[in-house]
Length: 183
View (tube, helix red, strand yellow):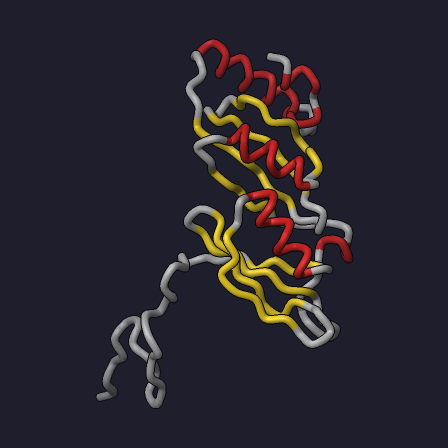
């Protein structure tokens, strides 16, 4: 009868160099592809207060691997290289992912990111689900939503929710409905 491998145990012939998740990382770690990797590292440090943990750069100056910490989360950043299966949002003119950042002072973080060069996609506003929330696009095409939990009076929360649902019912996104921000 074959021996069953313990869950998480290395396969036969392989040994684990350490814990399955490196120290400081979480189970899921975003890896951003950009055009202008070194500049991206500098932008994220200025905009979001990221701490640089490391970088590896080619002799020509392209970023092979950069590691940043924003709050308690690590983000990997690299330039796009010919033949890679990664594309930067700036080269495909879209993105399918938004990085969501919680902050205990979203106004300060928001202003810092905008001052660093992020473009406002959705203004920072009080949302019906109980967060002060806004959406930015960084100079490299990546989308970021910034948020912090807030308390809203029940009547305000319900009015904001009703307005959002009316927009969704028309097939629109509430971020694009001016009345939604004025409730």
